[in-house]
Length: 389
Length: 234
Ligand SMILES: Nc1ncnc2c1ncn2[C@@H]1O[C@H](COP(=O)(O)OP(=O)(O)O)[C@@H](O)[C@H]1O
Ligand SMILES: [Mg+2]
Image 1: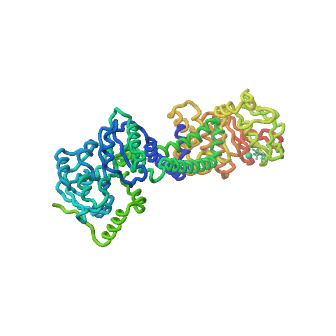
Image 2 (image 1 turned 120 degrees about the vertical axis):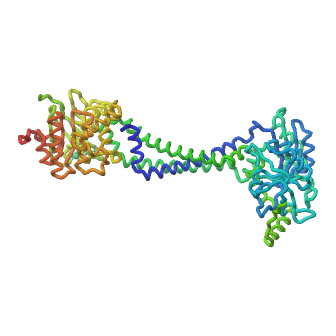
Image 3 (image 1 turned 45 degrees about the horizontal axis):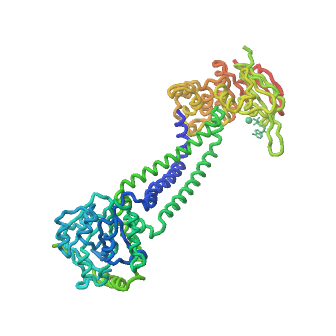
C-alpha cells in the first residue's frame, strides 16, 4: 500500500469509464501529435534558412504559364547561380492520370540545378541525346517494373501531339536520391522535344527554377525577379520551394488556421467531457474522501489525491496519444519528410490537380477541347499503353 | 486506574437547517475513564452521532470543550485536529465505510499511509490488525466479497491499526444480525480488556449496551442519565 497505489486504485475504480475518458483524451492528443508538425511547417513559411532554390510562378493564376524568355532575363539578375524550368505534362499512363508527376525539363540545366537527383552521367547523356528519352524516379520504376529501354506510351489529355495520337517515350535511366524531399515518383521528358511536337503553347513553361548562391539573401533575389517583370504581360511570384508547396496546400484554405480551429474545438470538447466525467466521479466518492478525512488525512492530502487522479488520467491519456502519434509519424515518415523538405512532390502535384480542375474549364480553349476528346476516347476504348521491347 | 481520559464539559452544538436552528446538544457533560467501554443509548435523532463526532474530533462544539488526555481538542485548528485524529482515534461506522476499490488489507493499511513506516512495515502491521479480528485469510478480498460482519471487522482492524487509545463506534452493529453482532461486540470487549482500548460506542441496541461496562442515556439534547451497568458480564 502506497499513495501511488491509492491514486491508482481510485483512478481505476470504474474501469470502463476511466478507459473511455482516457481514450477520448488519447484521441485528442493523437490528433495534436499529428497536426502540430504540420502546423509548425506552415509556421516555418518565409524562413530563409537553408534556401538554395527559388521557384517562379505566374502571379495571377497558378495554371497560367510563363514565357520561356523569362529564364534568360532571370539569369542576368544578381545572385542567380542557375536557371532551369519545368512544364507540367499530365496525360494518361495506364489509365492512371495522376499516379505520378510528369514534367518536361531541359536536360542539362534541370539536373545541374537539382543535384539531389542522382543518376549516372551515361544515363543523363542518353537522356539529353535522345529526343524521346525519359528519366523515371526509382519508385515509379519499381512500381511499374520499368527499366532502361522500356517504351512508354502516354495518351494526351492536355498536350496533343501534332503528329501522333499518342506520345511515345523510351526509358533512358532511373534516378534516385537520398533526400526525402525528392520526388522519386516523377518522370522527366525532354522539353525541347515536347515543345516542338505539342499542338499549342509553344515557348511556354509552368515554372522557372532559380538557383541562388549565398552572396545574396534568397528573398532579395526573389523580390528582384518579381520586380523585373512588374507591369509586364507575365508578372511573377517567386518563393522558396518549400513556401511554394505550402502555398499549394493553402489553395485548399488557410491550413494553419483550420488546424488550429480543429485542435481548439477538439480540446474544448474533450476538456468539457473529461471535466464532467471527473466531477461526476468525485461527487460519487465524496463519501470516501470524508472517510479518509475521518481517518486523519489532511484536507490537502485529499485534495491532492483528487488532483493526482485527474493528472494521472490526463498524463496517461496524453502520453498514449502522443506515443501513438509519434509511432504513426515514424511509420509515415517519408510522407511527412516530403512535406517538410519539399520539391515538386506528390503533395504539390495533388494540389496542382485540384487547382487545375477548378481553373481550367474557365481557362484556355484548346485544353478544354483536349480534355473532352480524352474523355470521349477513354469511354470508347480500353486504354492500356505500355509495350515492352 | 480510574484516571479520566475524555472530559466533555458543557458542550452545546446546534445545526442551522434553513432559517431553523436545531439545538442538538445542550450543556452536555460526560467524563470517560481510560480503558472504559462506554455505550450511549437512546432514540435516533437525539444527537448521539453529533456527540461522537465531537469526542472524536470530527467536529467542534459551539460552546464548551472536549479535553482528551489533557489536551483541549476544541481549540485545535483543522490541521491539528486531523493530525490528532490520525494519532489518537479509530472510527467504526455503522455503514463500515470501507473503500470499495481496495482490498481488506489495503483498507486496513490506509491510516498507516500517514505514518513514516516502510511499505513492508505497513504490510505487516495491516496483517497483524487483520489477525486480531480473525480475518487474515481474507486479506486480498474486496469489500464486496465480504459479509457484513466481516466488513465490520475489517473496519475495526482499520481503526486499530495505528494503535490509537480511543475507538469510536457509531452504531457498529446496526447492520448486523444478532449472532454476528454479538461476535462483533465480544471482539470489542476483548479489545477493551486485553488491549486496554477506551471504547466509546453509541447504539440503540440494548443488547449491545450490555457488552459495555457503562451506559449513558441521552435524551432531548441532554445527557439524561448515566450509570454503570451491573450486568456487564464475565
Ligand atoms: N450536519 C447536519 N446539519 C443539520 N442537521 C444535522 C446535521 N447532523 C445532524 N443533524 C440533525 O441533528 C440531529 C441529531 O443528529 P445525530 O447526532 O445524527 O443523531 P443520532 O445519531 O442520535 O441519530 C438530527 O435531527 C439530525 O437531523
Ligand atoms: Mg447517528
